[in-house]
Length: 563
Ligand code: ADP
Ligand code: MG
Image (cartoon, rainbow, N blue to C red; front, side):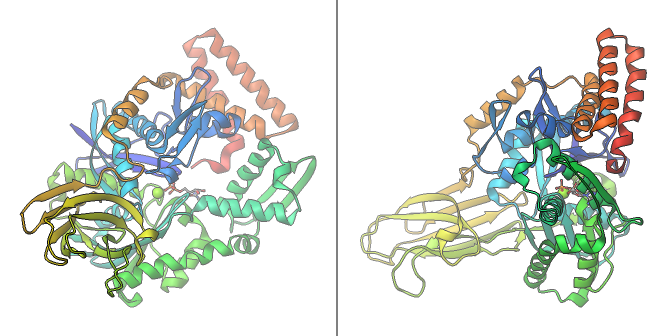
């Protein structure tokens, strides 16, 4: 019974195992610790995940998908190779790939996992994540908030006592958490975030500004040209501030462009995004009621926090230089792995206890508390940022004479009116017909460590009780749907691991062919053709040598993007 810790990211995923009192991050089939969260199908209809699929995003856009984590917990269907999938199923494919890599690395079956989720994930999204793990064939022992995982990874390194703030900016999301570590207990005081602010948005802003500067219509560019631009900008984004300044030298629609990506240009292009960094930080600090002066440390998590503009913005807001001594892309996976170690009751972790908070306010619908009799008002039961597990009970009375039914509508959100909050579920209760206000029910909300909500209703006059775990949240899968998803995934054939290295090289070559021109393109084309000829001859020793040569050749063009 091996349990692994998983960071299921929007852009990249990673996993690890707790062994001999330490975190061991697990390399995937390509030897990388990060696996791009990209899923696709190859020509033979076999499933491919990670770097190979990522290469094929541009060469085979209809057969490949990315950033589906943003659709977790919705019924939205995503088309890949003429088949439609939910984000949960696609995430399950990523998880299954991680599970296989872990099993190959550990030499034993992996049956359980701890998976991290953004602190801002709502109930539906958490359910979907748990279900994805189960579809992939792992029992999800616990979900852990990403910033909490990060704190756990940092906390174990030097155990600073005090309040600290975790800033996590990945590819698509920005999460802020205020955490206290005291006497061996880690407690999240507050979390806030922006689900649409990440490194990819900075990239998008760079591309938009470049096109505007040059008066180029985006619609007029073919997908190859656009990808060339995105690739060049991504390289530049990672090199900004270096000397000499990175250049973007490309040809678009027959015109050559050669521009220096300077820090002022970049700062200006992303100014709107940088402004949005502030609000979630302020909200988290306000909710935690922690003055700036009491913060012991600010921790940076997520690949996008490598950007100097982000570090400077964070530094200014907090009046100090943030810490980033752990690899920001891997901190969350490290923390999830520590949690996996905790779960397995590793004795070296005995002194660490973890508490967490509920990211949204949960409540029920009531009539106007001011007495107008109008329905549709929100009564919070569990306030945002309450420490979990938590449980609260509220007594509700009938409002009409001979009222026979009381409906408990469950909502999540921060609005006074329920219509502007997210509907999670309902419970119908029958009560004896009496005068208004003579019958009452006790509604109890219990929110557990996994972020799952349980509602208990008790009719006080009869003692009857009804219990409901909020499962039927919109977007969550029913048991039948789960079984179907599991069958669908089981029926999909994964591209064989041992042949994936070849496919990965070909996909990298095809991408580079698409994004280069002239002599370079011809040389890439020749190298690919030569490699295909070697593959056709099926002699293993020859294939191995040719693979090494092709890899070295292709990596020359991808150099800056490699970790
Ligand atoms: P997620 O949590 O969304 O899966 P990650 O934490 O892996 O994402 O971060 C991915 C983002 O980090 C991407 O947008 C990527 O461009 C950005 N990134 C990675 N390395 C760097 C770097 N050296 N400089 C700037 N941005 C980077
Ligand atoms: Mg992340």
